[in-house]
Image 1 (cartoon, rainbow, N blue to C red):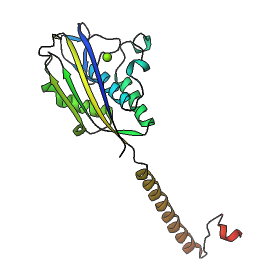
Image 2 (cartoon, helix red, strand yellow; image 1 turned 135 degrees about the vertical axis):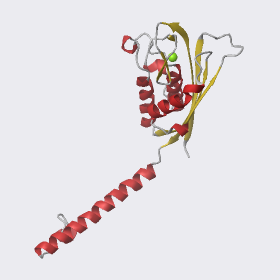
Image 3 (tube, rainbow, N blue to C red; image 1 turned 180 degrees about the horizontal axis):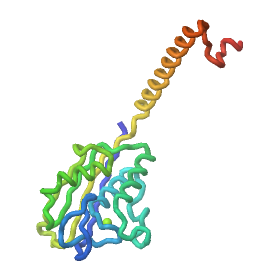
Image 4 (cartoon, rainbow, N blue to C red; image 1 turned 120 degrees about the horizontal axis):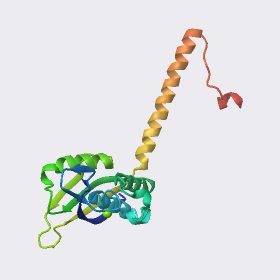
Length: 201
Ligand code: MG
């Protein structure tokens, strides 16, 4: 079994006057997270975890913070690129686990909704997404949101897709046989497969 682990971390300071987005959710709160993009600390950590798992660099190497194209960008764009990178490398996500560290708002009441949203963005089941939250006890980081994320990837099994392809080809052959029998019944003649190599030789 070819598996990979990836880890990502991110932090953003709270800032008045911007919407708060965490895990793809817009959360009702007096302050949002400062950042060049929408500041979604959790999606940034997940993006880095995915990129790291396939040694594809980090979020900054794909999306430089000064680039005006990513000003106020929806962070699901970054996550989608990381998902393309792992697909190109031949892997898919088994599960992800995350921990948010922030004083407010309380994540517990919305963690289920956040789990569903992150699962949706990653194209996996909510059962394969962990969302946990802690307050920054003793960290002197009361006005900051931090996110840690780990991902587990598994190489896509080529034999599975090959078997599926063979099954499709076999069912097409069976269908052709049925059609040929029907046609020959109607016309009372046998219909031969075009380009039958045995006829040529
Ligand atoms: Mg960030």
